[in-house]
Image 1 (cartoon, one colour):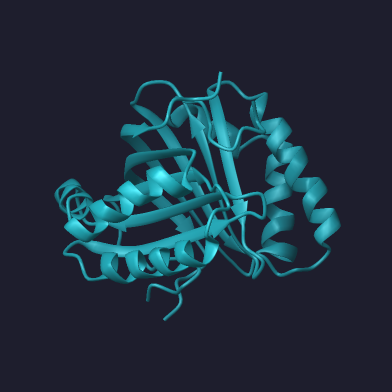
Image 2: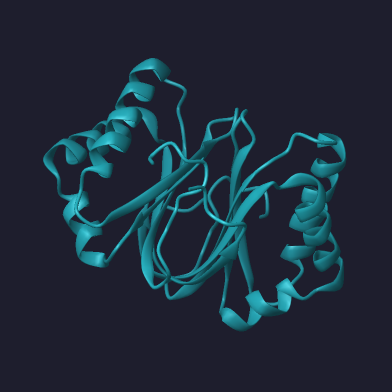
Length: 114
Length: 114
């Protein structure tokens, strides 16, 4: 489910966390392992609904994770292993980044994958 | 301003439109021209705050545009040239896509570019 290009989400309302970043290019292999682990860990959290991610060749990336409510977002933020990853991200990988916490109000598009 | 990796947005609340898609790979040059034109046209619309975009090598892309309010999102949706681009996108370029309209409630990160 984590590897779907487009997350299968329930009817709104639910929450989205938009994480936009510019990557330093440093230790891309270590970064990829960390990112994969965080995807796996996020998917185990209560309230996790799905995730979508894309990164350009110039290092700019957008990851959108979807959550049942604000409480699950705050809980995920504080998971110890995720905290450590955030710290390493700030120090080593992301000279610029922004997190936006959003309430999804409506959506439309092609049918979801089964 | 349209080319900033991370959009310079005002204090919340404001709106985000998350457009996730899988690209067919068809006529990528025509697509790139259309996408650039839509970025330019969006930036001229009332209520436009900024845009961020990334696409993976496998064709999955995420574009997040930011808007002052729901009314500006609906107005942009209905701009004739944008309508035509949406139609062409559905027919030719996007076998899978989803639009999510979200209210940004809070945000944090590194300082914005000046």
